[in-house]
Length: 128
Image (tube, rainbow, N blue to C red):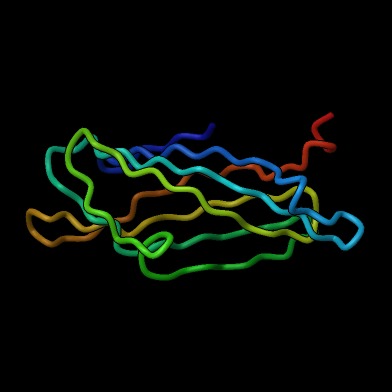
């Protein structure tokens, strides 16, 4: 599990290789990941946007951005967290992701970036 804290927002992330959804002979490797966003600040925050950089072993880079996560823009109260899972396909059995969430402080409407730690996407057969 990878962890990073920015401005009182702690992001924990863990990835998994989805063997049953992958097709290695077709260069299709599916990975899921679980994200936990914990608010350790003293005010409510709202997750407005996401930005991801996704890299595979061929050095192909994709940038993904948009509103919220999985259709939600959650408000996270102090000492609470929001957890969600998602997935990403790669054309290689190994890669990595990183990025940030644009967060809004509900107290004054100001925004800031909560950085997502870089994490590895690795097929189980590569690890063994």
